[in-house]
Length: 258
Image (tube, rainbow, N blue to C red; front, side, top):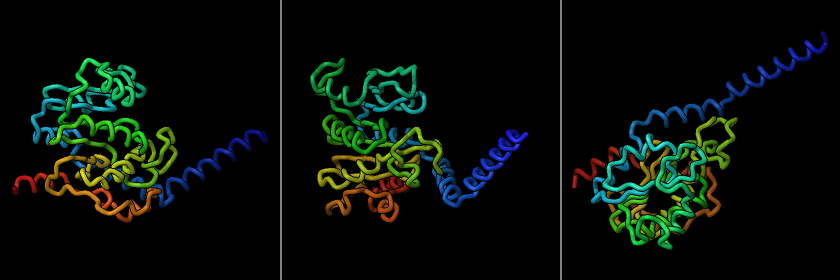
């Protein structure tokens, strides 16, 4: 009988803990931010296709494809290439089943089925969402982008510090399974490059765009990095400036006004 009572007591204690978590203000605020982001209308596919419409749309590369039906298959471009090691989607029906590091290394050595001299109109980076890997992908992509092309990064605008946690598999946080990682840190760093111009569209968890050519509402940060440790609190205080966060629809209107 005592063992039954202990089990009931333990169960009641767990229920109380669960109630505290559900009613915790941090969990509630983070959940509200998650829902707000989920319901933003413009998706990365629409943004990528529009950017490609500003180019000859001859060559497109996607890094981190997972299920190609979600984005890759919907991209409108004459030739499309996909890279993914297949860790998250076992079917992995991509062109190059490898990490982006290996892909770019082999591309540079001329060991792939495409020319080492290829230049892409757009490269979409949606691979490992950790800042140092995102930076590697940016550096490599800039070598293979046309002068009027675009390097596009997903997940550049995490709504909370829990969405930008480094551990993807830790889902017992206020952000639950939703994860943006620290891609924003790499994007912010490259907004300080004087030869690049950038914008982050405020939709679909933040779609960051880097370009060698300046476009309306694109800019860069001319001063040095204020705080090289990249605390999330600084992003939260200066999100619009750090990310050059803009509405995609407002940006399209600015193009039409020209």
